[in-house]
Image 1 (cartoon, rainbow, N blue to C red):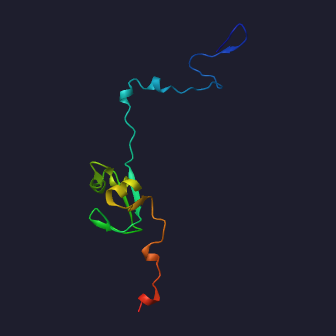
Image 2: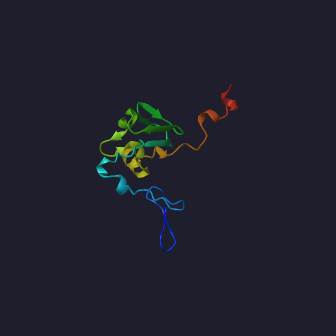
Image 3: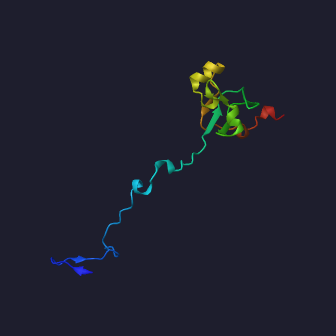
Length: 127
């Protein structure tokens, strides 16, 4: 350590000041070649729909109102539900469903109504 003629203290090269702000290196300093950056992992897309109409057959099953189907990109079910002309069938909006099947069979998201298992047994059916 030395003292300048003005009276300020100068530190040697090996000792940073205690009040010095440490500036992290920029990405340009760290990355020499941008092509060396590995791509960020991509989460597979998942589609969840609930059926609002009975009778659509997908994946070898007839789907009924209130049932849900969730498929993830990269699975066999996803591949079976991709149509070469219209893309992922479960992503069709209301108009596209009507154009394809004549009515709307499903909506995006989970079923918000009651399920069949929550219905009470009416007296006239339990005899």
